[in-house]
Image 1 (spheres, rainbow, N blue to C red):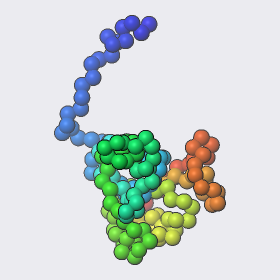
Image 2: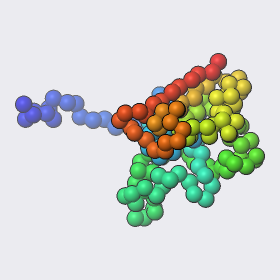
Image 3: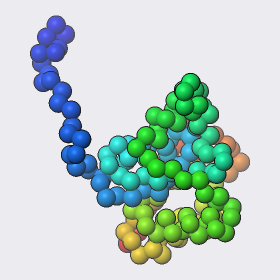
Image 4: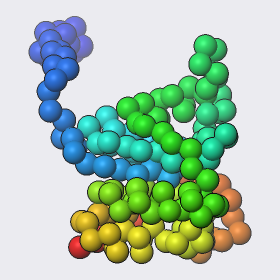
Length: 170
């Protein structure tokens, strides 16, 4: 049955380097961390979106230290996989200056992705409110580990209760 497998499929032709991509011209501001959010935004970046990953200054995404570590780059391989084709900037989300920069970035975004713990987005001034006020047509994607009601639980039960929510404005 599998003897003629190669003959049954056409030879792969690589995509030309200058070929247009489906999400070219779409800006994504990415506040996500660890696995679910970075993986989702990796797919958007692979499809041509301009993904700007927001990280904590000096520390970055914890996935940078997740094994296996790349011996030459001193980063975890999952971080390298999940953050290809993205730009990254360190912004202190607890400083007034950092919050102003973030609000300006969100105002230029077509998509905002975050997987903050419950309550963090509200403390930052709510990405939803900033996106809605920008007047741009934009979407917000949120991933909530353990669901939004599980305020005291940290971590993810990816099989049972990981949920993505999306909202669009104008």
